[in-house]
Image 1: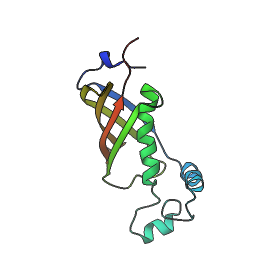
Image 2: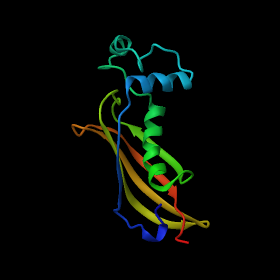
Image 3: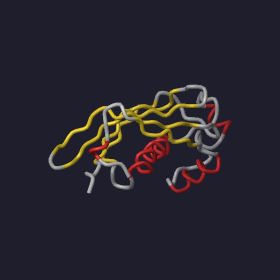
Image 4: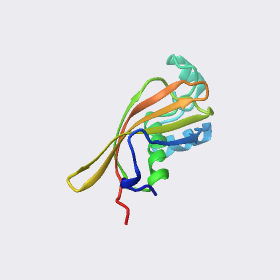
Length: 140
């Protein structure tokens, strides 16, 4: 677990290697209570909406980004996640999620760490970008 005192501007978090399989997206849509088939699960329906194939739901992409921070610093550290979806996230493709610390400060008794975050594909595609705000504990 990282401690606030050990973090510096420019520190990198990750990468987290991740991939959303067809089965995982289908399971997620079932839990999310999303009707299927849909552009998230069916190649033909996705193409009818102008997509190259089924895509990962935005909320699932957000969960994959959040996992970078919870794997790194534990549950409860993520306070805010503001993402921009630059292009649809495909199924069955290797993805990398990385973060870069851009600010550290103490605010109202919390140790706040701001990070830029980016989800990319194996070919350098930029799928999701944004900012995360974390609360990181002090060293005991």
